[in-house]
Image (cartoon, rainbow, N blue to C red):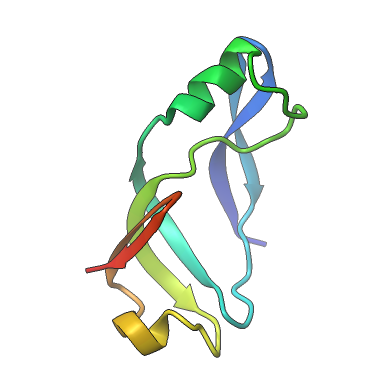
Length: 98
């Protein structure tokens, strides 16, 4: 089993870096090795306890990274022709492959 590191919300004012099982690519999905990520305003509100979420949530939903694997039938493939090893980023409203 391969592991990855994740920033995990544990409660207001508490984030811990934990090892988690690395996801397996399924049909229509991509696994991205995150090389950097941004802090979104939503993340700040979560940590401050102003936005209710359950402890255990992995924070950081605007990553930049490298495509490690692509599942079959990925609908983005028709538009962007992603490939393993390509750089990619995801924002709440945008997805890009470079």
